[in-house]
Structure formats: C-alpha cells, structure tokens
Image (cartoon, rainbow, N blue to C red; front, side):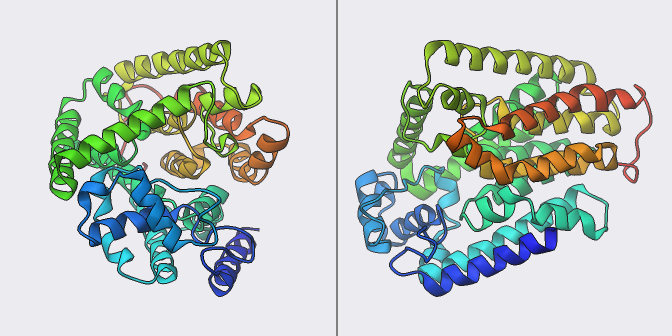
Amino acid sequence: MCVAVIGVAVVALIVELATHRDGRTVFDSTLGGDFPAFYVAGEILNQSNRDRLYDLQFQKDLYRELMPALANDRILPYASPPFLTILYRPLAALPYAWAFVIWVIVSVGLFVVGLRLVTESRGLDVWLLAFSFEPLVFETCLGGQMAAIGFVALALALQGERRGRPWQTGLALALCWFKLTWLIWFVPALLFGRRWRELAGFVAGTLGLAGFSVWVVGVEGCRAYLGLLRNYATAQTGSETYFQTWKFVDVMSCARLLGGGTLSRPALAIAVTLAAAWGSWLLVRWGRDAAEPWERRAALWSATLTGTCVFNVYWGVYDTVIVLLAVAVVGRRLPAGWLVALWMTPWLSQLLAQTARVQVLTFVLAGLAVYFLTSLSKKLPAGGVATDQSA
C-alpha cells in the first residue's frame, strides 16, 4: 500500500507538469498548490522591491501574471516571515514549473534528513510509512507547502535534546518562527521545565533571525509582516473566516466546522477551555519530568509535538507531518493500532470535514497526544538510565 501511494504521487506530479497551462492542471487544480505564493515572494525580492513584499495588491498583480488561468479565482498571500524569503529568490529566477520540481526535491530531502536525525531504525518499513503519509506526500510535497523546513528544525531540536546539546535544541527551535503557531507550547514548556540553556539558545537564534529579517526587507517590511499576522489572527478567531476550515485540524477550526462554518462564542469558549486544560496538564508534566532521562522525556516531547497540532489556533493538515517525529522518537513502544489510525485517517478526514462537518483527524491526534502523556510514559520507571543507542 505504501509503495502504491508513493507511485501514485509520482505519476500525479508527472501528469500535472505535463498538462498545466497558465497555472491550471488537468485535475482542475493549481500546479504546486500554495507554492505560487512563495515563488511570487522570491520574484518581489529579485525585482528589488523589498519594501513591497507584504503589499497584497502587488502580490496579487504578480500572481495574475504567473497564474492567469486562476487569477480571478483567488489570491494566495505570502504571509511567511522575511528571513524565509531568501530561500525563494533562486527559485524565482527559474521558470515556475522547474522551480516547483526543485522545491519538491528539496522538501523530500529535508524530510529524509529530519527522519534520519531522530530514528536509529534502518528498516524499510519506517521510510515507506513516512513517505506514504498523506499529509507529507500530497499536502506538503505536491501541495507546495514548507512544512519540511519546520520538520528538520524540530528534528535538530530533538537530536540536541537526546544528545545533551541544549544550545542546539534552542537554536533549532528558533527556526520554528517561520510559523508562530509551531512555538505555542514549546516556549512555555522550556520555561516550566527550567531549561535555561535551551532558552538562551532560542533567544540567541530569535535575535539572529530578527536581525536577518531587517536586513532582508528593512524595518518597514517587518512592520508590514506583523500587521499581516494581526489580520490573520483576527480572521481565524472571528466568527467568520476566509480560510478553508476543512483543511485544518486545530480545536478552533474543529469548533468552527461543528458550528456550520461560524465560530460562536460558546464554541470559542469550549475550544479555549480545552486548549487551556491541555496546556496546563502538559506544562505541569514539563515542570516535573523535564530533568528525567531521555527515555521518559521522549514521550513528553512526543506529546508536545502531537498536542501542538490540535490545541492551537491555526494548524493546517499539511503541518501534521511533525507527528512523524513524535512517532519516530518513541519507536516500537507505540502500539500498531495508533499507527494504523494515524496513517489511514487523513485519507478520509477532509472529505468528512466537508460533508459531515467533523474533522476526525483532530480527535485521533488529540487521543494520541493524551496517550503519549499517560500510558506510554508510565511504561518506563522514573530515574532509569537511558542511552543514546536505546533511544
């Protein structure tokens, strides 16, 4: 089944490349999914228009030139931080189709590196399961998303944690500023766990990225980026939204789906209460177990990774790839039933979210996060001795 999924993805990519005209493919979709937004951002910098990077009208004009067949349908705004834009400059110098193919290859390479950093397994089954995971192969790679960047950053953080390199962990977590929601629980967790050296590395990395962002787009460009983030936050937490809610797995989007597309005050209160309850439980565990050997902390990190996908304000299905890291660090201690549920659910979850207004992947991820915090962590004795090999 895994080989078949990977084969279908490769064939789909070839067909899309062979049939795309003015941005639209034979599947009546955009070649590259959301990749045009990143390509346009690179174009803006290549044209020496850094002050207009977050000018939505300017982005729209360039998008119309790039995707004339789709320009009247929608606009994909570029809402990533300035420091990432430098990655897209060389890609924007190439024809769009070639740039997308290279980005797919880069994304696959980053996923390979990330998995290699956190797993000691050399079995083919691990790699087949990972690269046939629907959010990875279709939503991220073929969808032109950039979750691979955060994936390898978190893998570096996990490697630093396992090997006792706190500065590596902190610096790697700083790279997760590429999406603010990725840090919503990790920074408080480090604080409650009194991980001061990791926090020092995180602050140093943050300052470095902030300075680099100012160099890339200037102070005004950074202010425009912050303004765009405020607009996004308002759209996601307001009663109405322009996001495709069925493609998100966080509790806020789940509540909106159940409410028929509208986020009522009671639904918002329930979502916030659930997130607060989860966060309190998680942070108490970080405060208690953060100094335990790696074998116990692995479950804690896995819970944090998985819970971040659910107890959040904005989490696309493509970003659920970080659950692969959560599974990899605990290895064969995770029952096969959870693997089956995690692998199978994404194939149906978006269809059910659109038709039945229930995002079942949210419930699977929430259950897995709770399992990591309870059943799995109890299987190991406190104060045990962990080795790098056993991890």
